[in-house]
Length: 288
Ligand code: KIV
Image 1 (cartoon, helix red, strand yellow):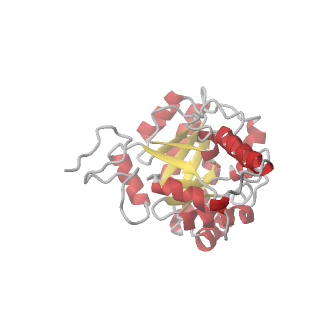
Image 2 (image 1 turned 90 degrees about the vertical axis):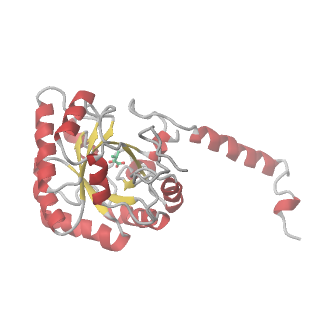
Image 3 (image 1 turned 30 degrees about the vertical axis):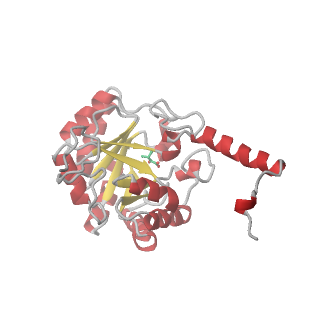
């Protein structure tokens, strides 16, 4: 007999449909995400940039994967998200779609690919949907991108919004710092409500005080996805290289669940030592 776990964040084995760990045999949709908010299910989102990693996360039941413009740093080695282009991100997005079968794959629209006009946003988003098979797009900003959100949604493209620390605006923000303290918290709240009204299906809150994130979450009927926004958002997102311990000097909000850099270091040194000592390849790795 199956039973539904009493632990909210554990995949259910019973009949209750869950966003995290549910086995529907089809892609997660915006309707599933809205239903999770209605039943107050908390859910995880991770970034992904290649097919094999996407398959691992998909098999683990992660319902939403973001092909973030953080690829600029963790894939391409830049020191900000600004240099990465649509042409850089399209093949990564296509790989994540090919590597997964259940997760909704959200493509991040990179810097200067949507800000100029709603038409520019539509052309860019359409490339991610048509050429890479993305199921939704994400863009950064509040009031100033409302016309973009409205046009995309009216064209049938689900939009994930992103408020708080918006890394594409790092030069205006004056660094990677907490946003929304004091009066600017009320502006962020107004932005979040306006984005919901414009049709966004979810909103990322990055590096904002926990009490503000809690208030925004309680005020919206669409889910909030926190990163450095405390425990009360509907979902949590981390860059996978951060949570796996591959990143050097991660932010305060990162919890390291694995020492991937250390494990890789040990493994590659073992390989190198065995090659140097003539231990690898052994007979079982050789053809007769
Ligand atoms: O690009 C990214 O990875 C992101 C997440 C950190 C939300 O925008």
